Amino acid sequence: MRKRWPSPAKLNLFLYITGRREDGYHNLQTLFQFLDYGDTITIEPRNDGQIRLATPIEGVPDEENLIVRAARLLQDRALLMGSLPQGAGADISVEKQLPMGGGLGGGSSNAATVLVALNHIWNTGLTEDQLAALGVTLGADVPVFVRGFAAFAEGVGEKLTPVSPAEKWYLVAHPGVSIPTPVIFKDPELPRNTPIRSIDTLLNCEFGNDCEVIARKRFRKVDELLSWLLEYAPSRLTGTGACVFSEFDTEDAARQVLKQAPEWLHGFVARGVNVSPLHQAISGQAEYW
Image (cartoon, rainbow, N blue to C red; front, top):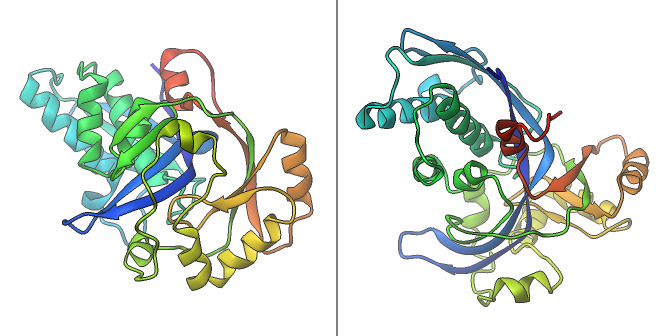
């Protein structure tokens, strides 16, 4: 039984805000693609029903950690369905590579990996649709990681349409600051009326991110980082930041730019993939990092 599970990063190849809802959330159009890079989650089954997190996050109680919440959510649903094996529990640890508040989806990916992996380990029999429905209660980005295929997303990010964008190479860089999502979405200058367009139209337009103007205005390091990267390749913010990325046709081209990066730039090179490394692992198609 596999013990180590990939928890990949994602990029928002574009992100447009098409309106503000009455509940205060925003309607979006965005394009998700996975990276062959991310965290690794190790799961050891238990037979006493307990969920234990061996790698807690300082300042975050276990009860609020998305990993623990995902495991207990699956336990509760499988118990209601009568498909939870007696005593099913787990010891879970995570090797973090993805920065918190970076816009790479680390927390959502961790939650999705736990849902998918424990559903497999415990043999609880939940369908992908059922797991995605559980996932959206943990976060709007969790379902795309559960489903495991690059997707065009609408609504608050929960309406997913599978797509197959080009699998480019990316230099992903972190400016050394964390951007809380509410800071971006509460800014009065945030663009909120980008016209709704079809996926075919969007895929044939130059990609952009409506959150970028606010991130650059409010976080000087983001502005400096993008200004430097744009000298070498098309570059933009992912999600609400703080990470930015540059796209390249080859791995070598991406690594050449990373070699020239100033000392304050912290980054990595990874390939965009349309099938999540988690789903490649669970299907036995491929190993991972």
